[in-house]
Length: 75
Image (cartoon, rainbow, N blue to C red; front, side):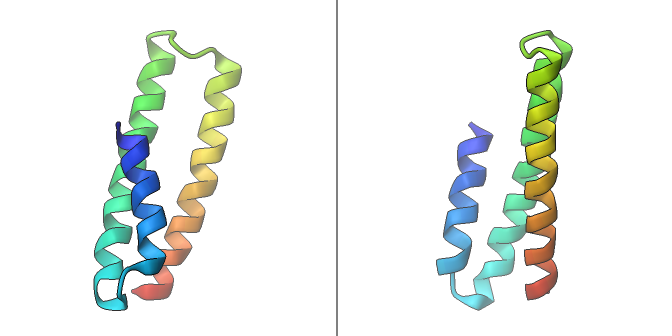
């Protein structure tokens, strides 16, 4: 599942040597986009109600902001 891969990348990034950290962060960013898509598809097929979808989207946006800041720091 992409969400678990995303969590793995986020946990791995701080312990990755600085020369390889950007690669891990870029992978995490791509995985975040895939998770957002999966959540949207879940909502579209009515597997998620609107309230759950909005909560998840809000959390994913916040993760994206933090990840973006982290990428800027090491870019």
